[in-house]
Image 1 (cartoon, rainbow, N blue to C red):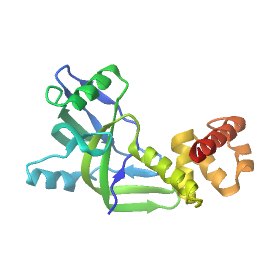
Image 2: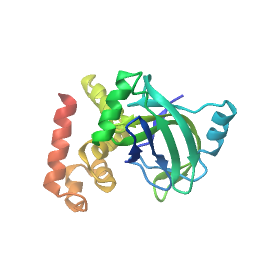
Image 3: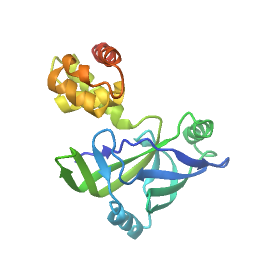
Image 4: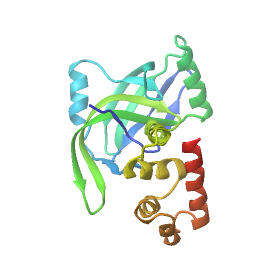
Length: 221
């Protein structure tokens, strides 16, 4: 059983002085950096299950199960995505107060969902997974998506052990950590440095090469 994290840049719409906030925890028909796309209706069953329990997932800080910072008061699907309202317990919890300060200042402005895939469809031509039904576990206030940190740790641990990380793991690290485009990362994994010569759509060849050198040095550090 593996909880996944949806990696799509999101903005919190509003944050009040008393800790109430709202925004979209997930949006439909947007490709995340790992090639997952949430389709409309994916949250229908899980929201019904939460409703039957008269409950909602918690507001977590940075996907840490041990650090809830408040309750959600509303979750619903609309045409855009999963709309949520929540309240940070800024009077009762120092961590919630800290999160609130960062959200008001704009230094933390994202949300990310923790979920398990119930039903998905792979489109080979697009190399994308369309998530048709997911089991929602939590929604976090995040600085950066947690799966980026997880992939860095996975690659770094493998290198330190003398193992070779999987191509998929390295490709995702290139995209999430170093800013390679999807096309550049796939080209590099297929043919190495020389493949980047034709991949100039997102950054120059020299910048791409330096990015990979920086990533390698960091992971081996």
